[in-house]
Length: 221
Image (cartoon, helix red, strand yellow):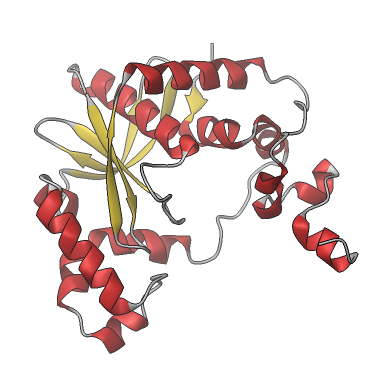
């Protein structure tokens, strides 16, 4: 049985139909500017020391003063701040029993993966696709290091937010359900009932759904 990628798990957790289109659309270019945003996750200390004019030129999504205040809070409250700033490994390809993919940061002792997201964080916790991704990365890292991994991190560097993700029984169960979903995809799955997800999906025209943008153009928004 072929290994499932972290990207497949993440897209299936968001919408199984999106995962199907990702598979059938061939190689796609990553969104413009994604690497600049990810690079912010390796410049936390520099960002804390930067003047506001310099920081305003970086691809951050909040006011520079807010950004630095958030990073300062992460430094106070996240015990592994130093390792997040200088991880043991960067862009590490990890292979588990079921999944494989690139872990953006690997923390060494105890081992823990950190996933860098270029989007915005929820008010609390992490989004479901990133939770699934974090579990998959932790399982792959555990297999690579032949040890247990009980937590991961998800970083939102454009917003100055870092969240710890515990590998709870519930999260592992959701991971397994998503894994089954990906394995069972052999044609276009049903459209999601949560149409708010369609507004940000590049496949909306192909999928045949009306997004809020289209409805507003038609005078129905």
